[in-house]
Amino acid sequence: MTNHALTGRNFSDGDLHTLTGAYAADALPADELAAFDAHLENCATCAQEVRELVATAARLATGAAEPVPSHLRAQVLDQIQTTRQLAPVAQLVDLRDAIVAQDRRRWFSQPFAVAASVLAALVMALAASAYEADQRADRAEHIAALVSDPEALTLTGSGPGDAVAKVVVADGEAVFAVKNLPPVEDNQDYQLWVIGEKGPGSARSAGILDRGTGAQHVISDVDVGETIGVTLERRGGSPTPTGTPLVLMHVSA
Amino acid sequence: MVSLRRSTSPEKQVRITPTVDELLQLVARGDNRAFEQLYDEVANSVFGMVRRVLRDPAQSEEVTQEVLIEVWRTSTRFDPTRGNASSWILTMAHRRAIDRVRSAQASQDRDQRVAQRDHTAAYDVVAEQVEHRLEQEQVRRCMQTLTDLQSESVRLAYYGGYTYREVAELLDVPLGTIKTRLRDGLIRLRDCLGVQA
Image 1 (cartoon, each protein chain N blue to C red):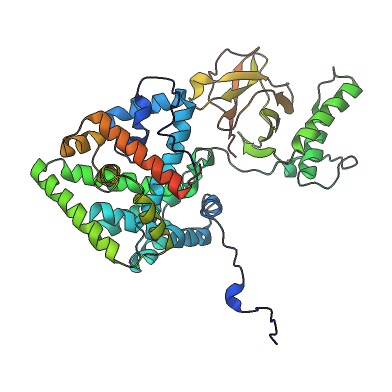
Image 2 (tube, rainbow over the protein chains, first blue to last red):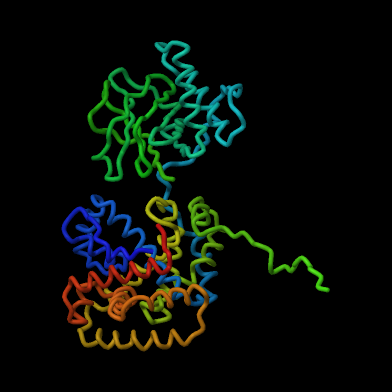
C-alpha cells in the first residue's frame, strides 16, 4: 500500500488540503469549518481523502470499545418509543397501485420487469397525441430498457391530494412519471427541476410537464445526490423555481 | 489407519448477521427490532470512545444515550453516498463528546489542560494492560506504525478534544507541523488498517 503522504498529490488550491487530518479528527476550530467545507465542494481529491480519514477515525472509536453499562439499553429502547423520527424527504407510495393498465407481453421475469411494464404502460397511455405510434413504441422500449437495468434506482414520491410520482434513474438518465396532480389553470404549468446538492439556487429546469391528469418525462442528466422536484409556475415555465415544490424526490443510492 | 470425519460441530456453522448499513436502512423506516440490533452492534464503540474522551462515567452514559437516540431520530437523513453507517454514527458520537469537552474547558486555564494531558498518557498505559479483543488489538498494532510524534498529535486531537491550534500550542510546535502529523498519522493508520471509503 502506498503512503500517499510521500507521493506528491496535486490538490486544487492553497494548503487547505493539509487540514484533512485535523478535520477527520474533529480538530478544526468552529471558525474554520465553513471555509474547509467550501473547499471540499471544489476538491474531489480532498473530499475522497476526507471520506477515508473519517472512516479511519471511526476505527479509533471501535478500537476503544468498552462494554456499555447494561441498564442503558432498556433506557434507550424506552425513549425511542416516544421519539419521532425526522420525516424522509420523499414519502414512499407504491405507484403500481395507482396504475390500472399493464402490458406484460414483452418483458422477461427480471426484478424490474413489473416496474418496467407498469411504467411503459403509463408512457403508452399518457403520451401526447402528437407522437406517431412507432415513435411511442421506440420510446417505450428505451424507457423499458432503462427501468429493467439492474443498476437502476427506483424512487417513489407523493404530492398534493392523490398525486403519486415515480422516478427510475439509470446511468445519469431518468424517467419521471406522475399521476393525479391537481389540474392547472390556463396561465400555469407544472415544471420539472433537477436540484443540485447546493439547494434551490442550483436548480435546473428539466422541462414542462404535459397538461392532463398524468405526465411522463425523460430527464437526460441527473446524478445521485440531486433532488427531482415539481413546482407550479406561470405558463411556459420560469428560469428558476418560484413555487413551493409539490413533489420532491431525492436521488440516493 | 486414519479415518477422516467431516466436521459437523455447531461452531462451524456460518451465521449471517445484517450489516450496520442494512440495519440503519431498516431503522430509517421505523423498525424497532432493527434498532435493537443496531444498538447491540455499535453501543460499545460509542460508549468506549466517549469514555476515552470524557472520562466521567456518568457523563459518558448520558452522551451515549443522547447519541443513540439521535441516530434513531435522524436515521432517515443518513446519506450513504457520503460514507458508511458506522462512520456516520461514530462521527456523530465523537463530535458530541468533543463539544462537551470544549464547552467544559472553556473556562479552565491552561495549566489544568496540561494536567489533563498527563492524565491522557497515564490512561493509555492502563488501557493497554486490559485484555483486548481483535479489533482493539488491530487498531493498537496499527497505531504503533505511526511515529511517536504522529500518534501523540492524533491522540491529543481525537481523544483529548484539542483543536489542531491548541495541540500546536501545547506541544510548542508550528501549525504546519501539526497539520502534517495529523494528516500523515491518519493516512498511515488508514493504510495499515486497509480502510476503504
